[in-house]
Length: 246
Image 1 (tube, rainbow, N blue to C red):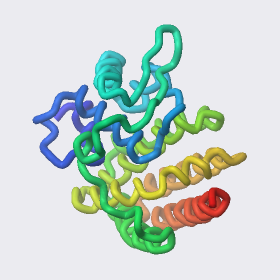
Image 2 (image 1 turned 45 degrees about the horizontal axis):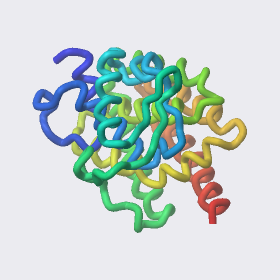
Image 3 (image 1 turned 135 degrees about the vertical axis):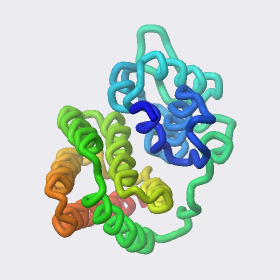
Image 4 (image 1 turned 60 degrees about the vertical axis):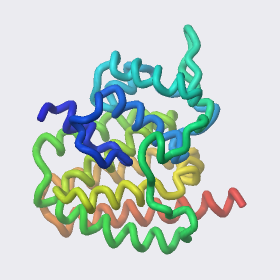
């Protein structure tokens, strides 16, 4: 399987064999998921085609074609000489765009956080033993790029999703990875608020680097400790964002 298809196999919501879908459709699904889940929202400007192509690991032509799909669905607006703007979720429901996420929105933050940690710490313990050199390089590349995103929460959130999806697939258990995709999608609108606070992105990037460093040692305990620190930080900042939004 090519590198491109391997990367795109991490798209949440797509449960079928990747060979049955075009690369363009895979990327349009990925962007639609980001909009439906609240990762990006109405009024946001998407990163440039070049930036999206680099972050998502595909060509600019593929990104351009995927954007055309979402433009036709009236989810984004493309203007000559200006950045692409998000309009909203469009007329198509999530399950028609990218598959169905777990029905987590009715659960409390504490309940989801506890369940997510139980699974994610197991995932990273497995990943520490099973991750490939190529995946480690991909994670490090994403972290290196994230250091320049401290003033761009939209681009950072897209990169953050790529980081976590790469990590989940590295555990070599597709069921666990799919469960984690759903947990990741919980309360993203509040994660957006949390990441807009001063130094929030920089702290997340530092956490990501710590996770990659631990994975590189192949020490499961070190990797679990690094992820636990990150999840604790995510929980605290998400709770604060929820409280301020009330």
